[in-house]
Every structure is written in structure tokens, then in C-alpha cells.
Image 1 (spheres, rainbow, N blue to C red):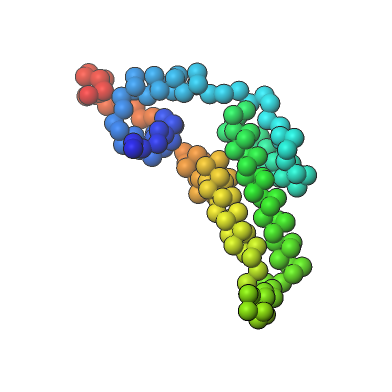
Image 2: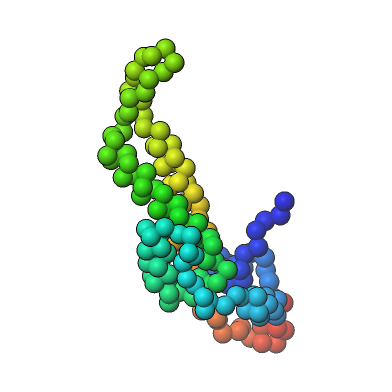
Length: 165
């Protein structure tokens, strides 16, 4: 399986390791711009819980000026917010019932065991982390977007005479 495609701006930030020419870069930029979805209907889906809807609106408000979220990202953001709401609910239940709960096995013995929701909470945290990284909601994923590109240099005498060789 091949590598994931990386947007041209991110490739340039990382140093143009593919050695793309200026014309190839411009062609990629225009193709990516034509394929960029609109961002005029970013609203929380009706199936989200109230907690998830609040989180959805908060994230959309925070990312408003970054020009990252589009209409096609709504479902991925909704999945993140749904996992967030479930994580919050698991946390509340665990706080109420405690980290250890009593469990009666088949032999009628009662033991203290870790709360079963701790496993679910861990799964939700991993799901949230994966979705947050994908959507630029973590500091590391935003850093790649925020790194400044190299300033264009004045062409040298050689480049003026022979072009981009």
C-alpha cells in the first residue's frame, strides 16, 4: 500500500523532499484548490448529544479563522465530539462509583476489580486522539500547519541564466 497523499503546502513546509519543480508545485496548488470543499454548512448533526453538540460548536468556533474545516469534515468532527461526550459520561460514572467495584464470580465469591468502564474510557481516549490528530486539534498536528514556509530567495546569476535546473 502506498503512502498517504500530502497537501502541497505541507510538502513545502517539510522541505520539498520530492524535488518538485515550480510548475509542478503550481499545478498541484491549483488542483488542490479546485478540489477543496466548501465550508458554508458546518453544523452539528442532529444525532449528537447535547454535550457533544457543545463540543462541536466550541471546536468550530476555535478553528473558524484557520480555514481548515470544510463541509465534508463535519462527520469526522461529529465522531470526535461523540467520543468526547461518551468519555465525559464514563468519567462521571467512574467518579460516582469509584475506580474499584465489587464483582461476584460464578463461585459466589465477591472481589474488588477495576471498574469495567476504565477499558471503555481508554478506548474512547485513543479514538479521540486519532481523530484529533487527523483534524489538527493537537499541538503537534497544528505545528505542521503553522510552520512558516521558506521565504522565496532572489535567483542567483546562474539561475537567471539557466533557469531552475
